[in-house]
Amino acid sequence: MLLALISIVYVSLRNGISPMPASARVRHVVANEVNRISGSGTIVDAGSGFGTLAVHLAQHCPAWKLVGIENSPIPLWISKLYRRVVVAVRGNSTTHVTFQKENLYTYSYSGVDVVICYLYPGAMKLLVSKVCSRLSPGTRIISICFALPGWEPSRIVTCGDLYRTKVYVYDI
Figure 1 (cartoon, rainbow, N blue to C red):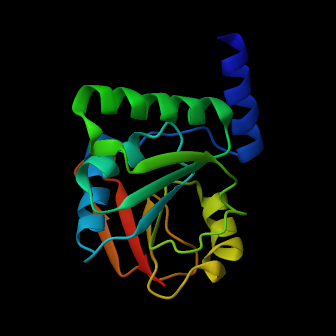
Figure 2 (figure 1 turned 180 degrees about the horizontal axis):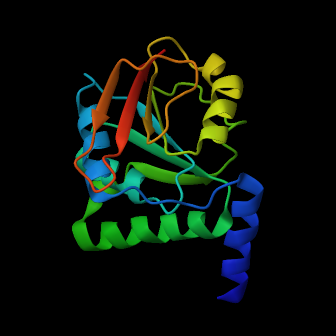
């Protein structure tokens, strides 16, 4: 247990932030935004943490394939375990979500239709400089809490949670 805690703290210090689960209301708003998009495709949860958002999206956006990418081994392991528990309890509604150990800045994003992120301002700045240029036209970015610096969102949704969390939607 102590090693797991040390691992989370170490990677959190290296990343500049610890895993932060999205509230239930935020997860519902993000799922609604995904369901506003016609069709289906691939969603990447960039920095998926403990996997709660990706698993929620798998349950509420069944036409979409979901990939959670996380570079911290303990949250990644918890994500995979959480997915298995949800499949065992609720059935196969989350079989189209996978979790991978990846760096969100070096991931290819090839064939990705939606990128979801819940990152701190410094990470959002890096995302703009290192990732956005690799996204295909038509890709949508859904950002929880923090805006992409220098970008104008196509929509801003204010959640009805305690913090009145904003969800920013961008079209590439």
